[in-house]
Amino acid sequence: MATVETTDETTHSAPGFAKHPGYRLDVLPCDKRVRVTFGGETIIDSSAAKLLLESSHIPVYYFPKQDFRTEFAEKTAHDSYCPFKGTASYWTLNAGGKSAENAVWGYETPYDEAEALADHVALYWQPMDGWFEEDEEIFCHARNPQVRLDILKSTRPVRVEVGGIVLAETRRARFLFETGAAPRHYIPEEDVRMDLLTPSQTRTQCPYKGDAHYFSFTGAEPAIADIAWSYAQPLPETSPIAGHICFYKRHVDGIYVDGVRQEKPTR
Image (cartoon, rainbow, N blue to C red; front, top):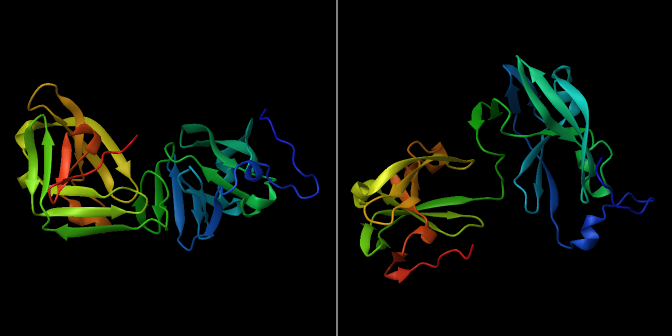
């Protein structure tokens, strides 16, 4: 059983905000039709979803209970506590011979600040078969409408060095500017020493760009695992980076733009 902090009984106000001023809990209406499939069944089909933007969390879709196929769900004894939203109840999904334990949750009596989540449920992303906005499949997690991506051609010189080797050098880079992230420099494969890179088994997904595959540096000792990545078939919005390679600043000796070494991330 989750441990619950005491609150003002007259207001049912969340105690977390007093301890963490500036904590963000925004619930936005969503005009998109959103569907979720599991076990060959459409578990959610909603045109009235809400998108929760919460500090230190990825965006999460919440759906009205009437848009949730409850015949495939069984409520469990599991619960969890959030000092900003309240106590969450959980449901296990069973459909098409598949089961996902405690894959659905909802705040049946949320704190006042999260009242918009009452009578709504959310689902863990990974156990589901597929997520769709309108008729387009989406990946990884819900997209934040406040995140913008700009991909710009640039003739500024970009150079990547590792172990005294110039691994890439170009005047044809695509600069990717993403809200809340450091600029990324995507370099055409033709301008990268691909003979010094070996494809790795690592794969990741980005809700804004698609499926990424990775390369390790094997041109000298020591080898460096997953030094770079590429989107062979990016999502349509980011198609200009197809066939381009991007390097981790922390894994190389330096990425230089206009001859200026770019700062490495501190963590």
